[in-house]
Length: 224
Image 1 (cartoon, rainbow, N blue to C red):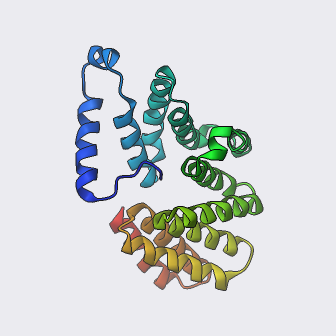
Image 2 (image 1 turned 90 degrees about the vertical axis):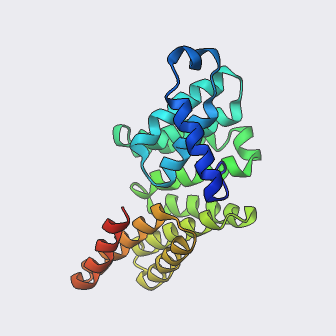
């Protein structure tokens, strides 16, 4: 994601900042609104795929960025909020909103923001239209490579592996998802690791190899 810190020490500093910002008295927040810590924490939760907890933080950050005239980060927070709203809104509706946002001049000219919009749209489309999701994730993968973002390269590769499986290409799916799992482990991407362990476990079970599948599912539970 475009706002992720680069290392553990930076994470620690940002999380502490976010904690204090979230626990300041309402009057203080009203006098000095600062959406940056809210967005930092929302990003962290979203990366772990905890969208339920991330959504209200994205929503608060969206309002605060709008109030200070920061349209770029307002859009970033809105996109995150939309992903969190999926359990209450139809995939088709959210997908169309995201498609419209992809035509926004700011989103079109900002590769980081566009990548964020594409990965959220890819997530949204996957449960609705595998071909549409494939287009989203293919463009996301190309952008991630251009930006040198190995974490999103790994995740996009994994999602394209899932889509290959849906298209019946099990050999390609296994290669891509296994590669994404190895990269997630190397990058200490816990959210990605849990997702791919779960998918491999479910896939093995579907193919009648439940004993092997349970090993992966147990590892996913342990990570979670």
